[in-house]
Length: 343
Image 1 (cartoon, rainbow, N blue to C red):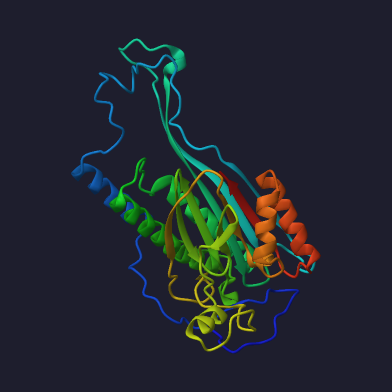
Image 2 (tube, one colour):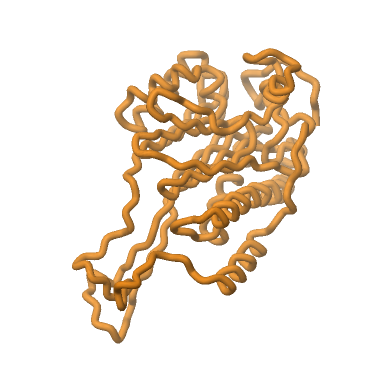
């Protein structure tokens, strides 16, 4: 690992490196299998706290409403876009937008049930992810894809399923999202060895947002960013895990851009032994917009310009396209990835 600054390279194999860790303790790693076993034990020991249907005899299989509807969730307009930029010869960014749902489909029953009511919907959440890979010679592309795939595996097989989370549920969910980032680290190490690219120290930033209206749960490592736009304000929720940011926070250098901003201290892979996941739990409001982006956007487009675009464009897809064009107009020295969710 290197901690000496060198001028950034805007072509070829990537210009970001992982520096030595500055601070942060990591919880012990937990595998997907151990998460499943722990979750099973909690479900057996605790009383289920789902919706209260005390006034109905068979609220799931024979509800009183004439036509069953999915539980209400606030409408969300979501879109993503990635671009190679104006200089790089390949794209090492990966993004994913995925709905996570639950339902029960009755195949046969002694109860009389109309065919139209045999598919019983449950609540739905949505994952928003951006990963910005590094490592050169295809290493970064592999790293970002592996990280996103691992979070998808966690969501499908191990994530605790909650519908109306209380404080304990939220704490567990944030903890397990962080554990999932650790699993990304382990998985990437194995893939790199198998593909014989481990000498490149492939790594990736990873910013994950999980929307379970009205809550937004965030797990983050690296210098991709998650912003919340509400009315006339734009707030950066995540912290940049870079040497430059640490120096600014310590008062060693003044506010503003620094030559140390491209040296990462906390990512998935990249030669580090652990990843320290940053966690947030937010309450969304109607009219909010969530923006997740790689540093290919923030390196060229100011927060003020992003806010203007978020407030002005009509659809999430328009915001994505306009922000990417703005980054390319500013030079497009890196890959550019944007995910926008509008509520």
